Length: 108
Image (tube, rainbow, N blue to C red; front, side):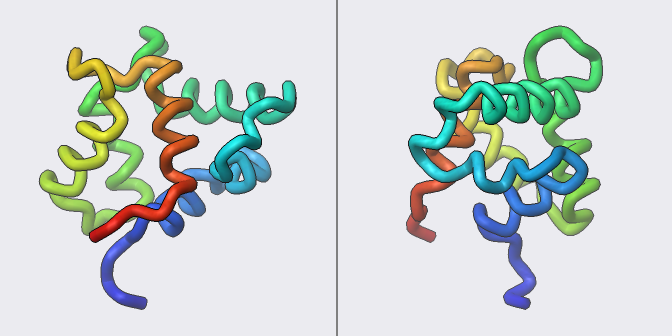
């Protein structure tokens, strides 16, 4: 009700339609094969062109669907957090690391 979508709310929205994925966002819970399959499923849904990476445009489409009030600033902040090697794409390893990190509390 704050008018802002925090990390926990974002990932709850992201999990909709992808099975019980929300539980995957807790640190240390990616060891189960079923968890890995769910993460791969989410990644593939976000990678709409199927090139094996999530582009800025693909992330923007997901964010707008989840919350139409996302700003370019929000988009860039999330993308920079996820794109660890700063190559302008989010690969599978960066995506899983980002999901794991999302379970940690962040300072505003």
